[in-house]
Length: 157
Image (cartoon, rainbow, N blue to C red):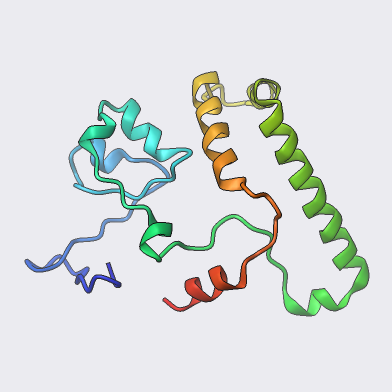
């Protein structure tokens, strides 16, 4: 909205921004015309809520040049002076990437592991398979490295 110059104060020539939790209830309950959604999660809540993909206009933040930094491993700079800490973090990143590679290659097994450890009983095989497919797209090429251009673009807002 900032990039397009929209006011976010609810004025006639702007938009009203509502607080949104980690769900899409505002659009499903017709309290909002637009919600923020991740392709691997909330988007599918909208679809499962009765909308068809053809009903939606999807704004891809990455393609619009306004994507934000999300999941990552962040450390305070002073900690990076400790070689033991750096070594642990390097092993953690390497192990995490290896785990994601395995999950992508063994989707059914990964989904079974997730469902077996779900203490809420709210996860479904259908949802977890969809999420795995979407996450796999986000992991490619899967180096685990932060592109400084992505960081610079994000902190510029």
